[in-house]
Length: 124
Image 1 (cartoon, rainbow, N blue to C red):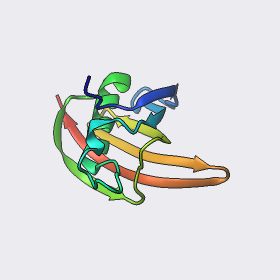
Image 2: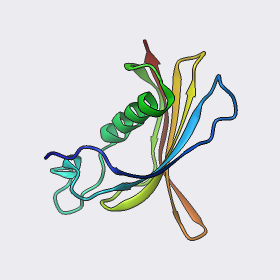
Image 3: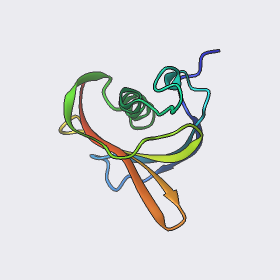
């Protein structure tokens, strides 16, 4: 079986209002995910395109976001996501503007590392 998605550890609804539902997904980025293959053989890291794909996939699943990619407005990759890391993916869906806000981060003790963030425009 080809593995393309991480292991979901927990999810938490963090919505503050109905017009902007949000969710926090804790996941383990397993080392056997296909996307690591060939993305630097001696130093694998999770490709940015995979991170965007996961954000859209989980926004559709948990937040009922639109399914068609219309474009990116903002995208920052700050720190690599490595095999077997435990990370959080925070998603916020702005229904009115059809915009998905995402942030990948990890915690090590008192230190929070931001790995990637962005704003994706989605359409029906």
